Image (cartoon, rainbow, N blue to C red; front, top):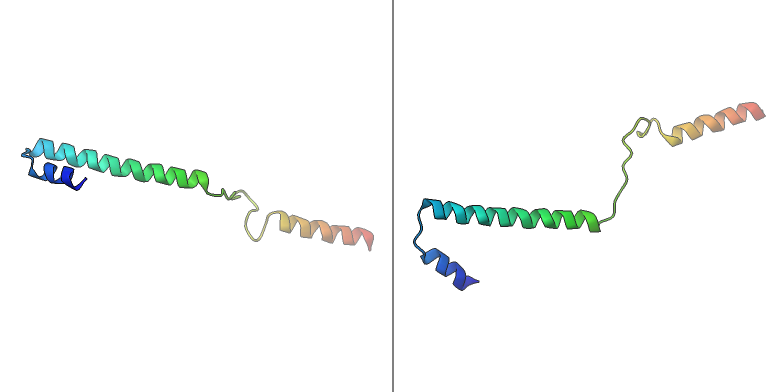
Length: 77
């Protein structure tokens, strides 16, 4: 690989060839990082996030359970 890099550095090229090589290198790096990111999200655990109404600390199922338990106490007592 180092030999190929040396050959590329010794090669005479104009601005168009240089920009073509830089563009291909950038696209390769961006493609590899995108592929790795996709693989890491696919293989990792998926955490479900509830962002709907009542998902905060002041709402949600815990608040509904408290209201239900209080109303049941009033009916019984």
